[in-house]
Amino acid sequence: MPTYYLKTPLTAEEVSKLRVGDTVYVTGLVISARDSAHKRMLEYVERGDRLPVDLRGGVIYHAGPVARKRDGTWEILSMGPTTSARMEAFEADVIEKLGVKLVVGKGGMGKKTAEAMRRHVAAYAIFTGGAGVLAAKAIKRVVDVHWLDLGIAEAMWVLEVENFGPLTVMIDPTGRNYYDELREAARAKIPEILSAIEWPH
Image (tube, rainbow, N blue to C red):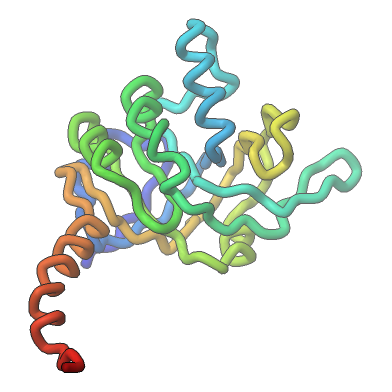
Protein backbone atom coordinates (compact mmCIF):
# COMPACT_ATOMS: atom_id res chain seq x y z
CA MET A 1 0.00 0.00 0.00
CA PRO A 2 1.25 3.52 -0.79
CA THR A 3 2.49 5.97 1.83
CA TYR A 4 1.62 9.66 1.49
CA TYR A 5 3.30 12.62 3.18
CA LEU A 6 0.75 15.44 3.17
CA LYS A 7 0.99 19.10 4.16
CA THR A 8 -1.93 21.21 5.27
CA PRO A 9 -4.08 22.70 3.92
CA LEU A 10 -4.92 19.55 1.96
CA THR A 11 -6.29 19.79 -1.57
CA ALA A 12 -9.10 17.72 -3.08
CA GLU A 13 -6.62 16.47 -5.66
CA GLU A 14 -4.27 15.09 -2.98
CA VAL A 15 -7.04 13.51 -0.94
CA SER A 16 -8.71 11.97 -4.01
CA LYS A 17 -5.70 9.64 -4.38
CA LEU A 18 -6.12 8.04 -0.94
CA ARG A 19 -7.54 4.54 -0.68
CA VAL A 20 -8.40 2.20 2.19
CA GLY A 21 -5.19 0.72 3.61
CA ASP A 22 -2.91 3.58 2.56
CA THR A 23 -0.56 5.12 5.12
CA VAL A 24 -0.53 8.87 5.69
CA TYR A 25 1.73 11.26 7.58
CA VAL A 26 0.60 14.86 8.08
CA THR A 27 2.71 17.99 8.51
CA GLY A 28 1.24 21.41 9.23
CA LEU A 29 -1.81 22.29 11.31
CA VAL A 30 -4.10 19.74 12.94
CA ILE A 31 -7.19 20.77 14.88
CA SER A 32 -8.42 18.61 17.75
CA ALA A 33 -12.18 18.38 18.27
CA ARG A 34 -14.41 15.98 20.16
CA ASP A 35 -18.22 15.94 20.38
CA SER A 36 -18.63 19.17 22.35
CA ALA A 37 -16.40 21.10 19.94
CA HIS A 38 -18.18 19.58 16.92
CA LYS A 39 -21.52 20.68 18.34
CA ARG A 40 -20.24 24.21 18.92
CA MET A 41 -18.72 24.41 15.43
CA LEU A 42 -22.09 23.66 13.88
CA GLU A 43 -23.80 26.16 16.19
CA TYR A 44 -21.40 28.81 14.84
CA VAL A 45 -22.30 27.82 11.27
CA GLU A 46 -26.01 27.98 12.04
CA ARG A 47 -25.66 31.50 13.47
CA GLY A 48 -23.47 32.62 10.59
CA ASP A 49 -20.52 33.29 12.92
CA ARG A 50 -16.92 32.78 11.84
CA LEU A 51 -15.04 29.95 13.55
CA PRO A 52 -11.76 30.82 15.31
CA VAL A 53 -9.95 28.57 12.80
CA ASP A 54 -10.43 28.17 9.04
CA LEU A 55 -10.99 24.42 8.49
CA ARG A 56 -10.99 24.44 4.68
CA GLY A 57 -8.50 21.78 3.62
CA GLY A 58 -8.03 21.01 7.28
CA VAL A 59 -7.39 17.95 9.43
CA ILE A 60 -9.57 17.22 12.47
CA TYR A 61 -8.18 14.88 15.12
CA HIS A 62 -10.69 13.22 17.46
CA ALA A 63 -8.60 13.61 20.59
CA GLY A 64 -8.24 15.42 23.88
CA PRO A 65 -4.77 16.06 25.29
CA VAL A 66 -3.05 15.60 28.57
CA ALA A 67 -1.58 19.11 28.70
CA ARG A 68 0.21 21.42 31.11
CA LYS A 69 1.01 25.10 31.01
CA ARG A 70 4.54 26.25 31.77
CA ASP A 71 5.54 29.92 31.76
CA GLY A 72 2.44 30.77 29.78
CA THR A 73 3.06 28.10 27.12
CA TRP A 74 1.01 24.92 26.67
CA GLU A 75 2.83 21.60 26.42
CA ILE A 76 1.10 18.42 25.17
CA LEU A 77 2.24 15.36 27.11
CA SER A 78 -0.05 12.81 25.50
CA MET A 79 -2.81 12.93 22.89
CA GLY A 80 -4.31 9.56 22.04
CA PRO A 81 -7.36 9.28 19.77
CA THR A 82 -10.96 9.31 20.97
CA THR A 83 -13.57 6.83 19.69
CA SER A 84 -14.81 8.45 16.48
CA ALA A 85 -18.35 7.05 16.66
CA ARG A 86 -19.06 9.82 19.20
CA MET A 87 -18.77 12.33 16.34
CA GLU A 88 -20.92 10.47 13.79
CA ALA A 89 -23.94 12.73 14.38
CA PHE A 90 -21.89 15.82 13.47
CA GLU A 91 -19.09 14.86 11.08
CA ALA A 92 -20.96 14.84 7.76
CA ASP A 93 -22.12 18.43 8.34
CA VAL A 94 -18.64 19.51 9.45
CA ILE A 95 -17.15 18.05 6.26
CA GLU A 96 -19.79 19.62 4.03
CA LYS A 97 -20.04 23.04 5.64
CA LEU A 98 -16.48 23.65 6.81
CA GLY A 99 -14.39 21.95 4.10
CA VAL A 100 -12.50 19.45 6.28
CA LYS A 101 -10.50 17.00 4.15
CA LEU A 102 -9.11 14.48 6.64
CA VAL A 103 -10.58 13.17 9.89
CA VAL A 104 -8.40 11.14 12.29
CA GLY A 105 -9.55 9.04 15.23
CA LYS A 106 -10.07 5.42 16.21
CA GLY A 107 -12.75 2.78 15.84
CA GLY A 108 -14.27 3.85 12.53
CA MET A 109 -17.24 5.95 11.46
CA GLY A 110 -20.61 5.25 9.88
CA LYS A 111 -22.43 5.45 6.58
CA LYS A 112 -23.43 9.12 6.90
CA THR A 113 -19.82 10.21 7.29
CA ALA A 114 -18.63 7.88 4.51
CA GLU A 115 -21.22 9.33 2.13
CA ALA A 116 -20.15 12.89 2.99
CA MET A 117 -16.55 11.90 2.29
CA ARG A 118 -17.56 10.51 -1.09
CA ARG A 119 -19.50 13.65 -2.02
CA HIS A 120 -16.92 16.15 -0.75
CA VAL A 121 -13.60 14.33 -1.38
CA ALA A 122 -12.49 13.64 2.18
CA ALA A 123 -11.08 10.66 4.08
CA TYR A 124 -11.01 9.08 7.52
CA ALA A 125 -7.86 7.55 9.01
CA ILE A 126 -7.05 5.89 12.30
CA PHE A 127 -4.20 6.50 14.70
CA THR A 128 -3.17 3.71 17.05
CA GLY A 129 -5.15 3.73 20.29
CA GLY A 130 -3.03 3.82 23.43
CA ALA A 131 -0.17 5.58 21.64
CA GLY A 132 -0.88 9.08 22.90
CA VAL A 133 2.76 9.76 23.78
CA LEU A 134 3.77 8.88 20.21
CA ALA A 135 1.20 11.35 18.90
CA ALA A 136 2.53 14.03 21.26
CA LYS A 137 6.05 13.57 19.86
CA ALA A 138 4.79 14.72 16.46
CA ILE A 139 3.37 17.93 17.96
CA LYS A 140 5.92 20.69 17.55
CA ARG A 141 3.91 23.36 19.37
CA VAL A 142 0.46 24.48 20.44
CA VAL A 143 -0.43 27.34 18.11
CA ASP A 144 -3.62 28.21 19.98
CA VAL A 145 -6.45 26.77 22.03
CA HIS A 146 -10.10 27.80 21.84
CA TRP A 147 -13.18 27.05 23.92
CA LEU A 148 -11.41 26.05 27.12
CA ASP A 149 -14.75 26.57 28.85
CA LEU A 150 -15.59 23.08 27.48
CA GLY A 151 -12.66 21.62 29.44
CA ILE A 152 -9.11 20.76 28.39
CA ALA A 153 -10.09 17.49 26.70
CA GLU A 154 -13.07 19.00 24.83
CA ALA A 155 -11.46 22.29 23.78
CA MET A 156 -10.33 22.98 20.22
CA TRP A 157 -6.54 22.75 20.07
CA VAL A 158 -4.63 24.16 17.10
CA LEU A 159 -1.48 22.10 16.78
CA GLU A 160 1.56 22.38 14.56
CA VAL A 161 2.67 18.83 13.73
CA GLU A 162 5.48 17.22 11.78
CA ASN A 163 4.96 13.79 10.21
CA PHE A 164 2.00 13.01 12.45
CA GLY A 165 1.34 9.31 11.94
CA PRO A 166 1.39 6.62 10.84
CA LEU A 167 -2.30 7.05 9.99
CA THR A 168 -4.14 4.29 8.15
CA VAL A 169 -6.98 5.20 5.79
CA MET A 170 -10.22 3.40 6.71
CA ILE A 171 -12.77 5.45 4.72
CA ASP A 172 -11.62 6.79 1.38
CA PRO A 173 -13.03 9.40 -1.02
CA THR A 174 -14.86 6.72 -3.01
CA GLY A 175 -16.98 6.13 0.11
CA ARG A 176 -15.43 2.73 0.77
CA ASN A 177 -15.63 1.99 4.51
CA TYR A 178 -13.35 -0.78 5.75
CA TYR A 179 -15.22 -1.19 9.04
CA ASP A 180 -18.55 -1.65 7.25
CA GLU A 181 -16.96 -4.28 5.02
CA LEU A 182 -15.66 -6.15 8.08
CA ARG A 183 -19.09 -6.10 9.72
CA GLU A 184 -20.82 -7.37 6.57
CA ALA A 185 -18.27 -10.16 6.17
CA ALA A 186 -18.76 -11.19 9.80
CA ARG A 187 -22.56 -11.25 9.39
CA ALA A 188 -22.26 -13.38 6.27
CA LYS A 189 -20.33 -16.01 8.27
CA ILE A 190 -22.91 -16.33 11.05
CA PRO A 191 -25.01 -19.06 9.32
CA GLU A 192 -21.85 -21.07 8.61
CA ILE A 193 -20.70 -20.76 12.23
CA LEU A 194 -24.12 -21.71 13.60
CA SER A 195 -24.37 -24.75 11.33
CA ALA A 196 -20.95 -25.97 12.54
CA ILE A 197 -21.95 -25.88 16.21
CA GLU A 198 -22.89 -29.20 17.74
CA TRP A 199 -25.93 -28.27 19.77
CA PRO A 200 -26.71 -30.44 22.81
CA HIS A 201 -29.74 -32.76 22.36
